[in-house]
Image (cartoon, rainbow, N blue to C red; front, top):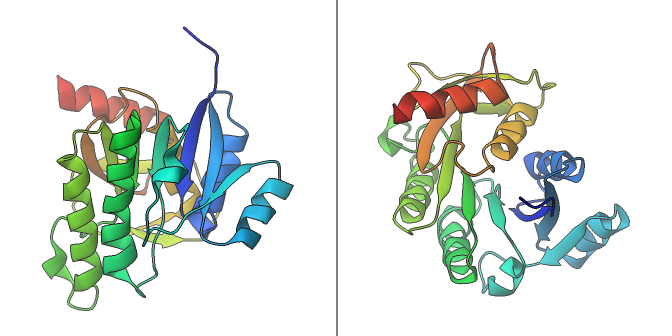
Length: 218
C-alpha cells in the first residue's frame, strides 16, 4: 500500500461542474487535481489557487496533458457549439492519449439519453456525439466508468442520488452531486467498466455506487 496521492486530470476544469470537481479533489487525501484548461489565463487562475494546471485544446493534440496522470475525469463540453469537435472527437482524442500514457481509469461525464439519441430531436446531434464518445471509451481497453446524469441544476448538493443502469424516468440532479459521484467512482473497482444513470435521490452517493457495483457483479 502507498499513501502517494494519485494525479487526476480534469478535462473541462474551468466549467461549472469542473470547478466543483477540482475543489473536491483539492480537499482529498487520495487525489491531486490537475486542471486541464484551454487558455493561459485559466491556467493562471488555478495556479493562483495552488492547483496544478495544463493548457490543452481538445481539438488538437492533447498527449502532453496526460503526462504523469494516473486517472482522468472528462467533464468538458462545447455547450452545443461544437459537439463533434469537442464532445465527441475531443473525448476520443483524450481517450487515445490516456491509453498511450497508461492511465489506469477514465471517468466519463455523459448524459441521460446518450443510449438513445432519437429521444430528442432538438438534442439529437449532442446525444449522438455523447453516445459515440461513450462507445469509443468502452471499446478502448481502458478501465472506465460512464456517468449519465439527468438535467443539471446549480442547486446545493445533497450528497444523495438515485443510481441505476437505466432509470425509469428523466429528472434533475445538482452539479455538486454529479461532481461528487464522478470523484467517488475514481477508485479502482468502483463502478468499474459500467455505464449508469443518476438523478437526485435518497441514497448516499458512497452507498449508491458501492451497492450498485456489488449488485451488478453478483
